[in-house]
Structures are given as structure tokens and as C-alpha cells.
Amino acid sequence: MLPRWHVFWGAVFTVVLWYFARIDWIYLSLVFLSSVFIDLDHYICGAMRTRTLHLGQIFDYHKKMSKIQKTERDNGIRRRGDFHIFHTIEFHILVASIGLFWMPFFYIFIGLVFHSFLDFFYLMNKNYVYRREYFFFRWVSKRFEF
Ligand SMILES: [Zn+2]
Image 1 (spheres, rainbow, N blue to C red):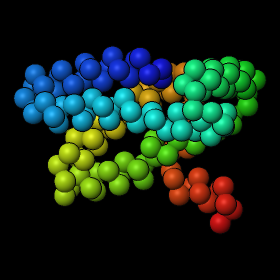
Image 2 (cartoon, helix red, strand yellow):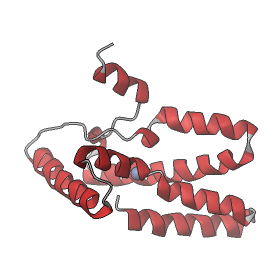
Image 3 (cartoon, rainbow, N blue to C red):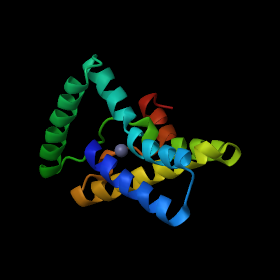
């Protein structure tokens, strides 16, 4: 899902939380920011692949990969995409675990889960669910052949 849609839906979600739960604005900010900036792993991955920190070139990389994945899907090729560590179940569990002891991470976790639901429905809608690696340890075991 494009970042602008995460900004939009993250803002809507944050306003809904504010309306119904009257959560402190600092915590609401954490929900919003984490619902958007979880995608920082896309930037990091793009930076590693393109060997640049230039945001425009990284966007171009993701656009190019998006066209390739569409072509592959249309030709029946079901290949995983780049690995995004913040989108793994283990990362969510780690943040939730810290959130049990330190409240700000609880709200970061809420933002992460909201973002992940958006991503999942987007991937389902586009028939790309197979593209993502959801488990860090499975990725590690495949990558390093444990
Ligand atoms: Zn995402």
C-alpha cells in the first residue's frame, strides 16, 4: 500500500481512537506515527538494494519492483518479495512484549497492528499475499539454510 494511504487511514484511525477513547495526544501521536513509519523497512531495504539513501531513487526501485511483481503474478509466478523486518510477526510480538512493561510501546503496537491489517487487506485485494514473508525466523532459516 502506498505511504499516502497509510498516512490517510492512520489519521482516520487516530481520530476515531481519539473520539471514542479520549487517549492522551502523545499516545495518539505514537499510534499514528507507528502506523505510518513501520514502512521505514521498505526504505531501508530499498536503500540496501539501490545502494543509495536518495528517497526518489528508492521510490523508483519500488515502482520497478511493483511492475515486475505484477508481471510475475500475471504469468503465474509466485515469488516472495523483499524482506521487511518491521512487518514480521516476531517484530510485532517484540513490541507488544515491551508494551506490557512500558506504555508507549503498547500504543506503538496498536499502530503496527493497524498498519499490518491495512497491508494484509491490500495484499489480499491485489492477490499478493504470497509475496510477503511474515516470519522473521523462517526468513533467517531460509536465507542462511539452517
Ligand atoms: Zn507496510
